[in-house]
Every structure is written in structure tokens, then in C-alpha cells.
Amino acid sequence: MAMSGGKDDGEPMGEMNTTPLIDVMLVLLIMFIITIPVATHAVNIDLPSPNPPPPDTQVKPDKNKVTITPTNQILWNGNVVDEHQLAGLLIETKHMALEPELQFQPDPQAGYEITAHALNVIKASGVTKFGFVGNEQFVSFGKAANAGKAE
Image 1 (cartoon, helix red, strand yellow):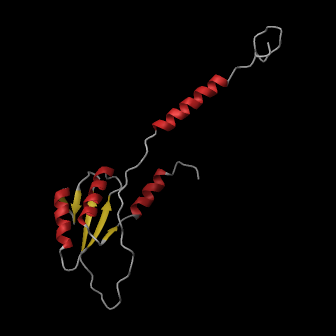
Image 2 (cartoon, rainbow, N blue to C red):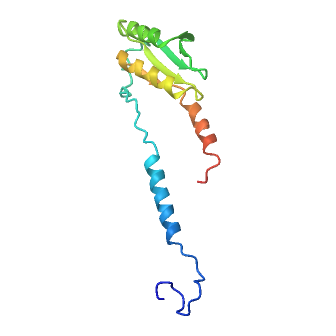
Image 3 (cartoon, helix red, strand yellow):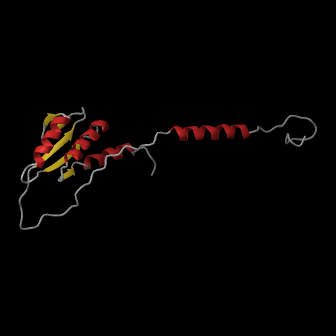
């Protein structure tokens, strides 16, 4: 009995056959890889290049701030607005003689969906002076999430 891997005396084999276990593990690995969802959602926003204003013009335009709260509310300069009101306000700022800068600051605990919707509204409005503010708050948020991981 050369196939049994043991002696020819008919005794049972002493080692465990691991081939079926490896086959099952490979099938499970392939199934897990296939079922992992692919993250394909993205909001592409063209940010302006950072060009400093010429020194002879010191005119500072007004700044409007859009904030997303942890309770998923959109705030325009501290006042609660919905997506339609936000779109109207953004269109108003586009028609001003000197377009004000739009600052966007989502809270770290704000929902992804409402933040993505707000960014889509901003992108659709055609605002040209747009910037993210308060990104330093996410540095400590990311460090807390990675605190348990080995470096």
C-alpha cells in the first residue's frame, strides 16, 4: 500500500491527512475575497491652486462657512439649512461681484452620506473659491483609531 504513506503491514496511518483541510481553507479564502465589497464611491472636487493674491490688492472677500454637525445638520454660517436652501445660497454667492470664499468643515462624527451630499451640492453649484478648514481635528481622530495598531 504505497498510497497510504505508511508501511505495507496494513496498520493505520499515524499522520493526519491535511490535504482536505488546505482545500477547504483555500475555498473559504476565495469566497471571502469575492464577497468583499469594492469601495467605488468617490466625490471628485477640483480645488483651486494655492495662488497668493498680489501684494497691491489687499481686498479680503467675505467668507461663508458650511458645517456638518454630529447630528447630521447642515449649517450655513451657523444657521441650519437643508440641501435645497444650501444650493440657493451658493447660487446667490456665485452672482456677487466678488465671490466670497466657501469654507467647508464637517465634524469628525458627522455621517458620510450627508457630507457627500453637501459636497455634491457644492460641486454642482460651480463655486470656484472653495476650501476645507479644520482638518487638524481629524489628525487626533485618526491617531486615536490607530492607537491599538502596531507600527
